[in-house]
Image (cartoon, rainbow, N blue to C red):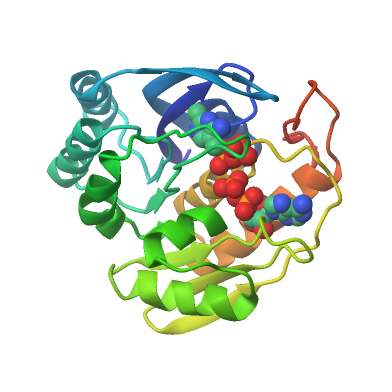
Length: 259
Ligand SMILES: Nc1ncnc2c1ncn2[C@@H]1O[C@H](COP(=O)(O)OP(=O)(O)O)[C@@H](O)[C@H]1O
Ligand SMILES: Cc1ncc(COP(=O)(O)OP(=O)(O)O)c(N)n1
């Protein structure tokens, strides 16, 4: 059995964060584990509160996982403060974490800041360089490259700028563009597009969390990065296409779509 760890925030409504990650891992037939960085009080209509677990306790959770059930891959999502980022980076180095997928979660789709402004420098300077692949959405990629992204050409330029600062790959997700849902993978100067069928739905809560944990699951199963992204893209498209209508806002995905 392959083992996958998510280090992320909890979403009590089950659509994003740790809950989306564990559902995705279960659907991929891998053993899922979670280090919780923060509790959020949120649902399909928005985020109403955040309670940080704190760096020390995140470190303790990582010690428990790594000294007992060593993960074959790791997904990192919401990490809201710089202290916790430093602890995570230190523990990943100490234990030699591998196959690291980082979703640089900054703001929820509903507009709530999920990362404090002071954490941004630590994210960029310490954590992102440790990723085998980082998966910013368009607003996050804009923050990382410093210019606005409105087209596929802009996505390419952004990936080149972001990718030139890190050793790992960059996957810029195109979910926030309006006509397509194509994602771009940049690996050491090489660009590859992953075409996505755009699904007409408002129920997109947790798409980024789901995509990154699907990539991590596929890496653990032994697929190459490009194949992992392609398989994750198929998974997310199915989970959106065969979606449910739960909650009063932007509902969650259907992780049981291929069963
Ligand atoms: N309406 C949609 N139809 C098909 N794929 C989508 C749709 N919205 C998002 N995606 C896909 O979901 C994944 C997550 O993208 P995105 O929504 O941009 O991330 P985030 O949730 O971090 O904002 C990407 O593969 C993106 O192309
Ligand atoms: C706890 C937690 N982590 C991450 C997110 C953001 O989820 P994401 O899949 O990037 O996108 P939206 O759900 O905001 O569309 C979150 N909301 N909560």
